[in-house]
Length: 116
Image (tube, rainbow, N blue to C red):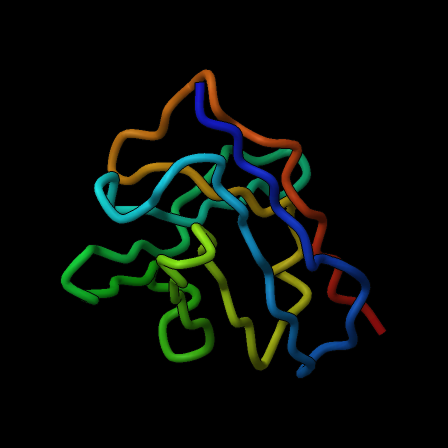
C-alpha cells in the first residue's frame, strides 16, 4: 500500500508562513489528483486543496488566496505553501488522494500551530 509521510509543520505566529511536504511512496504522476486535508482539535477532517496532473489547483474557501499547492513529479512529493497563517489554521495536516482518500494510507500528519 502507498505510504504518505507529511513534514514541515511547527509553531508559527499569526501572519507567518510554513511549507509542508508530503513524500509519497509511489510515482505520483499516474495517480493524480492529490490533495491536502486538515483536522483541527475536536473537529472533523476537512478538505484544504488539491492538484491535478494538468496543473489545475483548487482550494477550500477558508484558505483560498493564502495557500498554494504544488507537486514535484520527479521527487514524488506534494507541497503546501501556507501564508498569512491564522490561529484557525491550527490543525494536523495530511495529504492523500483526492476526491476519495485512500483510507488505508493516512499518514501521521504534521501539526501546524498558529499562536502568538
